[in-house]
Image (cartoon, rainbow, N blue to C red; front, side, top):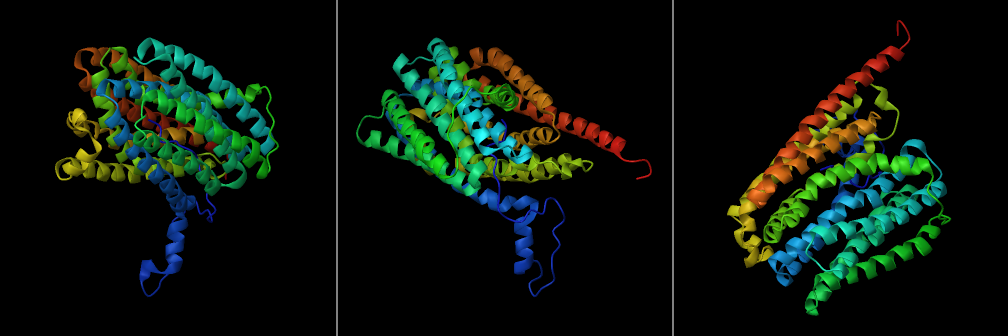
Length: 463
């Protein structure tokens, strides 16, 4: 799984990776000046992390509410099919919004491209990719997911078309107005989900069909408002055109590895459905949801740190991106271990709390969680070096890392899931994530050494 989420920008003074010099004072390291320096270190990562945390906290509340109410309303096999459908949709989401969104942010931060040019290219690309991906995803889902055409269509279109437009619009907002404005757009999108699920539940109408219809209606309305009113208000002249080749190419650079990452992350739930193990898919998805919520702190830091690998300048210094990746990984690994311990304690000390979240029909999911928890420290190790490869300009090599990892995942799903059910899915997830960690760090170290050698060759003789 890539920890590269929506890249962010901060308004604090950027001090890079320079050592934080502490001024003497009555309380030593606790003086206001020292606190400001520490807070602003690593390019203002602390401030950006707080903004990311605010959004993700709201997303966690929405996820908890949705999970509790949906599992109360759907039988185990139906929830397994629903989770499999979302697993398929999130794979295509790399094409519909992750690729275009990250590409447009790179164009703005790294190359300072004109905002209206970015909008015309990438919003058009998102609309076209959303329509095409929805058609393909619906066709594949009809083959492997045991849901009706209407259910599949509504859920798929809401995520791959309407929600994709919202998310790319939020990146356009960030490019023009900065990080806080982007956060507000995404928060409102989360609120829509937080309203829709309880409304349907208390009306006694929480079905997959109704949920898909509600999502598609609410997301489409918000997307239209963003395009017709909000983006023009902040300075965009809305235009649609045929996406230029360079926009398609730059989006593909991000979309391909992210799609491969999603195959590794969510392909297990699709595979369980493909092998007619819907009940196992439901149990596995329930356990996976709890563990994914536990990985929230890692996602927050990863999102806030992503764009710091993009700008040019200090990245010419020997070992620059490797040091950055190592520092972030050390911090995130410690955080991941702490989170894992917390989840283990919750399993054995806070079981009544888990009982509120996991319905009796899903009780077996609690036996899956201790094994899946091992995924969190592996996630902490594997995410950052792939961002370092972006900083080194090794986009093709980064894509190759993710594609090889996705291939390993698919082979493991085919070998392990049919005879072992959710146990095979857990084993495949852990093995493939460990593989990604090893390969991504090997690539990061190798290409940093090459970049350092090229930097030395460019230095004048005697410099």
